[in-house]
Image (cartoon, rainbow, N blue to C red; front, side, top):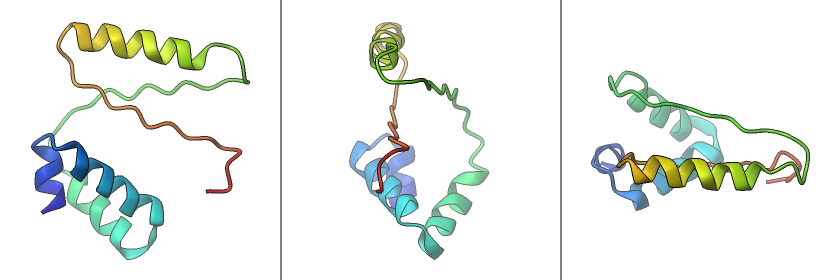
Length: 84
């Protein structure tokens, strides 16, 4: 059900799926399997670099530009120094 709702564009369902994946285990594998062959396309952009080089500023400008042209945008931010 969560996968269907996420595919329909429901942000809460996407967030719950991300939480399941983050927790790992069998549920994470089930989510990955359910999403693996859905035929959808997405562009993935990764930004990395040391603190203070403008990653957040670049992300904000990119999201603003993409949304201005009508694209849907999701941002998943990861702090590799975090223990979580």
